[in-house]
Length: 168
Image (cartoon, rainbow, N blue to C red; front, side):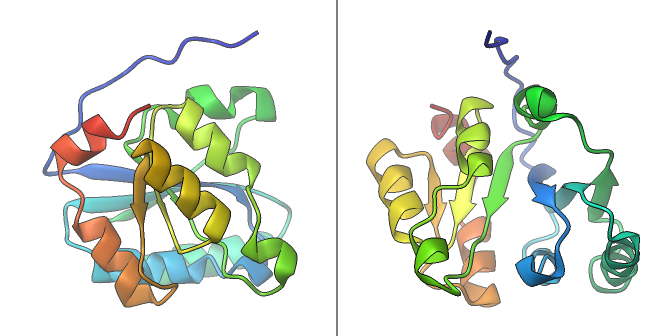
């Protein structure tokens, strides 16, 4: 049974972005750290990562300290049944899936729907299916490309009022 998600206001000076999911090297989570380093200082990235590659997570933490000190945080993962409630305390979800194959190009990952149900604005690369839903429902921003600069530009374009209006 669905649990109602409590809404919170958005602090324009500290906008919290979340990414939840598996910590797998093929997903290039370090790119998200680079994006936050390029984004305005009001944006902070929060990871909620699963997986057993503790060396990779340690590398991400080290990279975060070097590239975006004080702006990237790591939270304990929750069971799948608790994801929506756990991420609902953030403002924006970052769902980047570079199209390395046909399936990834047209994917609609669970984290995308978790984010929408949690009341988050979604920032995505130009993945056709996610972009279509984001645009149709005004649920976030779609970057012009998967380049780190374009994703940072999409994030920087968000105001607190934009984020409030993107909660569907």
